[in-house]
Image (tube, rainbow, N blue to C red; front, side, top):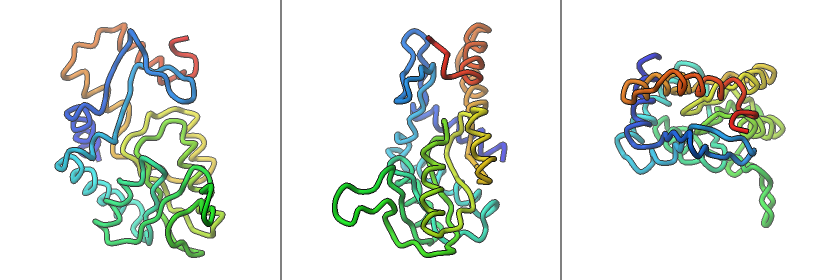
Length: 210
């Protein structure tokens, strides 16, 4: 597991999916400011990295959710990853919208879903965990049995971890924020003040940078 986490973090850095900026922190849709921005969508443009993620997602799926029947992507960033995993595992695939479609049949879930179907939800990054757990609830409301959530990276916010625990939904990720910091420190000279700021942000992201 350590090897997967370490190698995933390295590959995210290699393709420029992770950026740091303390002078002009990135602002999230939630309004939070962050010294780090991780764009896992970039991995789709690099076939070797894309294949690495797909194959290691499959390993984690088999180890943690061996009886999975269907792969469900969270719109939008989880859709391509879910598609790759489903194809590799030869499983059905569907995806969950953030809100029902405004026209046509008004679907919230796109694809065939059956009651009792064992589903693994796929996301790219876990920050607050809100979008993933919203997708989980939609699937459960449709009668599916959600085995857990797979994601590329987890920021490791305490509140998000508690939400997954309270929902009784296992969360398995290829890598996490701590591993990213370890790998970035190997290639960049991060002074004590920078390291302290990175850890302070993870502990209290909603107030950091204000």
